[in-house]
Image (cartoon, rainbow over all chains, first blue to last red; front, side):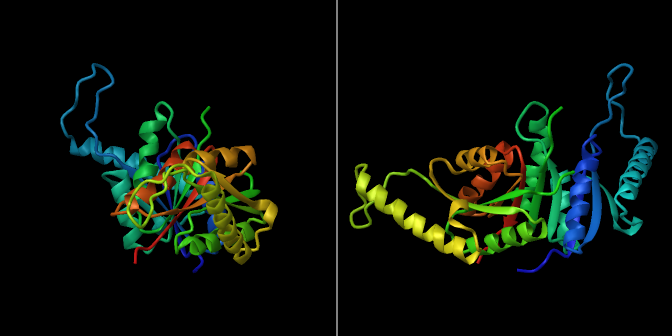
Length: 147
Length: 147
């Protein structure tokens, strides 16, 4: 059995993402492993808050949202001492992008939040579930306590 | 964030269970956590290998199978230096019994094998999946490489 060499933390910018982050950081320290972070932005239709209409695909707006996500990712990464070259921002299906990124970068442990089966959690939890099914490496699901 | 205090290793006696066991042991050492082990025996109808008939419920045979399982569990536990008082043998639904045992014993991390989505693995993998959904604590899914 080899020690973990490269741990990938997957974050969704929920209020508990730092809690999961600190667990991933703690694991990386105990295993002397490299720690990377990824956020996957779902490519969903954008709903205008004023009148509920679905806006057409807008490159500039998408660009702006990605800039905001990048800033948010950088903030979380800074709190976990993760260097810029180990920060990933990807658009697509969370479970597939996370699993693909892990394979392409020889990640041997993915750390992800797990929300269980209740309410909104059923939707959120499906990422952890999908990763568990598709990942070729170990997966640590950090249980998020519901408020 | 607290350090893990009590890690529960769930084993199914597959040929890879020691591999998962060594990962759990390694985690327990790095976290200075107590390590317990559980095997859940499914209470399935027993099929006679000679003519394929389903045998009636047989208390003595069940007892004998449990004795064999206990011996097997003790062997695995010995290789992982897990004392007898931290070995659990339970009959029932694996995911429910593992989750209940974890809650009753303040387990903060469950370690279980994960077989992914392919072939027989779909069936085997469902335990990891069920634990992920139902556990109130963190879950480490150790990916089993298919032969």
